[in-house]
Image (cartoon, rainbow, N blue to C red; front, top):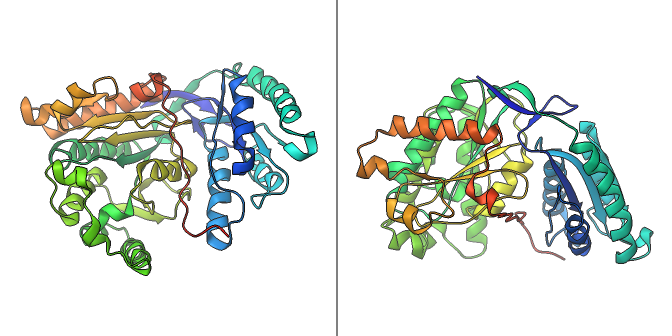
Length: 385
């Protein structure tokens, strides 16, 4: 199957063509936002990290910023730094430039303050935008697509309607040679052994079990047992009684494909297939990790409803609860509650979701994108010092 996308210099394919104004630290975030405000095609990724971080926490922030800049939906990048932060802007720009996409860098201190940096950055961004708008979509194979799978605000309908249908859609993409990734390690707890059986090797299965144990151990160092603190109050009100029950519904999003590998937060899959990425249960940070890992489109199931979008990728919302769909019809794209109410089969709904993914890949904007939702956050794993 073919879609139309933007072929990048390194061979990857974007389904959007964003100019990203990328602050390397919180200190440059507002300046990046001000630059982006002047250019219609530009989007800023403000965040609160990039300085006074150490070890793995520092590395994760830097790698996530680089991964976002490398995402195929991003056609060009202007890195904006303060000039003295730990997340060194020159290094970030240099690593993104390995894709051979247009990348430039400025720092506020070198420019002589924020006003001058905004002026310089706007001129650079304007030229980049002029070049980007001349790039046309071309026919590419659907196998170039990397799908991010997310859920949030789970209720009892998620595990019996929306999530199984998404699993079918994921399987259809895998059958076309594409790639998909499941997120939210905390929502595998109690069901990880079921997914591990589908691992292509014993090593992959052990890695899957290992990331679940790691997140539980990390919580316990804070004196918290995740199995006693989940599900959330909203989940409980929606009819989900235990974390194991929540997880058993969650893993339906993984469909039936073999699990090719387990990815760290923001890691790029090197082969086609189905992956599990170690991300938190917090929706926005989880999506950010998968986008840093190269995903171009997100499907997001929600029982209770959420408006969450993304700055650089379209987010398709699906609910298994028809009442939620009617209540949040401005935000949710597909009512999978028809499985429950109208007798549609899970396979029929899965095909409908798959067809919507193809339409969105070809340029259709889901509701979160139309409404300008650009929620963004980077997962932090240690204290700032």
